[in-house]
Image: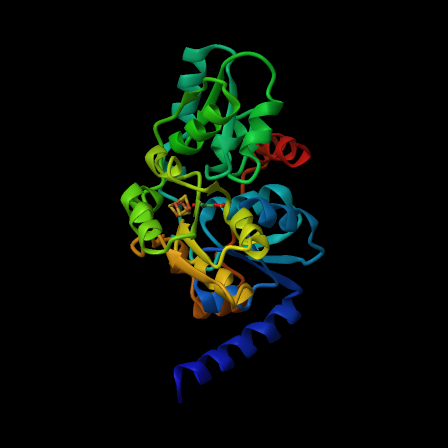
Length: 305
Ligand code: 13P
Ligand code: SF4
């Protein structure tokens, strides 16, 4: 039996069980191609939190990383949220803990905390408002006068701060996957492909966003790619996004800026693990109610922006 046949059998089992469990499968744009292909919805962090908040399904199978499943649990307390691999974390989210944030807030007395959605529920509970890479500019613009502490992504924070011309205190976190992308990766490809356009994720280092034609979330890159007249696009983000870009734009060429920009955690979810999660109804992601209620305030504020 070929690998493709194996997948067909697995996919059919998943689809049958999904119906029985009244489950919805949400998949992030960085997931493995075969996992994206079984998603009821595939999107960026903001789009996926919106879907998690809206769904009528009783079970959410979250194909992404831990903080994304936690955000779904924050927004949908009555639903069962399954993360097919509990070890699928985000090293950047782990770069700030609630206790460290509490200490910093004490030091900065009265600062507004804007927290990137790539953070734990406990950190969100200590924050005033959340943001994703798709809405960070709008969120920061919505914050009243006073000091802003931006956690945990220093590069997204610096990018937004420069764009809106407002200084912010930046937590020294970063994404190890996006940090692999170098400005030379883009400038070399631009030299080789005249007329190409470089789309860069704001988690990249400032010297990389500096050479971008557009700085966009993964969802923003997909929309841009669908609309632009350019035929060759350089993609500076995790390489999983290339699957949807190619599938949705067969007439265009997409070049990964750095093929090594691969998030090992995003790739931990496999079709087998999705099936096992539905069979065993675990691992379930929950958030303690007191934390959930406080974190929800920060997430709801973001969704209202
Ligand atoms: P997006 O919100 O752009 O999908 O990014 C999420 C993420 O984890 C980027 O590394
Ligand atoms: Fe976290 Fe980076 Fe992976 Fe996104 S790509 S989940 S920020 S480690």
